Image (cartoon, rainbow, N blue to C red; front, top):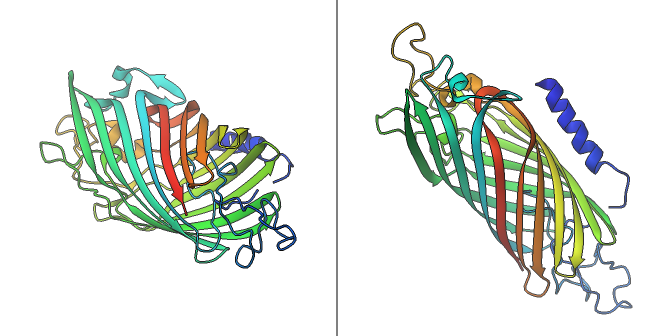
Length: 366
């Protein structure tokens, strides 16, 4: 799996690493009202926003990342943004390594297997910038999960829903030039989501059906943005680091992601995008002893299915996605949608593979 992770990272670096000019991570595109009064204020480098007439009265979302990227920009001092995102991931067919396997193979060593799963999230966020360099963000999500299981010849469906973990993040600008910018981010996720979702028989549902991690988590990131004419582009590296064991005796595996994107402007209020994302995540450390196990026989005490097996949760994936962004420069409103699918996945199976995913959202900036 290490080789696949390195290959994934190399592909994304090739996509985003070309030495081309770079753009401002801020939301608003300043409108120069008086070039004499504010000669130093450029389209993507308004260093005088606090004291001159070029202070923003328009919003340009063209430099922003596609809908599925979080923490992709910072704001100017006093900037405020509210956002809603809907995200859906559909998982079908079991994998072991990079190969699809049959339902029968997925049940080898178990009593059953997952057949398919849908994960939905309704994400609410607010961002505020106390200074030109620093932007703060608070975000949480309402989750809806459903899983169809094959268990000893019968198919059953289970569901879980509720609020997930809440994250407070800070993003700090490292530099900003006329056509380039970069910022670093650090988030702290609080264990507000449930890790006690249960089936009708009282046993706890598998790890992917729980709503939170049950731990305090760090979420560092580094984002780079650029623009040249009608093209904008960027990349982001990020991670999720779980700091301790939760109350149910386990720690979710840490994860890392590298993503790069390219936007093409259609006109002054719309753009299309393409994005490549490589991600890797580890198996669960520890075990929830209230998740179901095989009750008898030579495998007694072993997990009843891959979804409750802590050693069948890790993997890596390379995704390709396409997006569309529409915005209104006067009101500060933006609608963006992005959809994609894996081009490669290597999973510690048996584990459900991702079939496709979708992200759509609305942002309003002031």
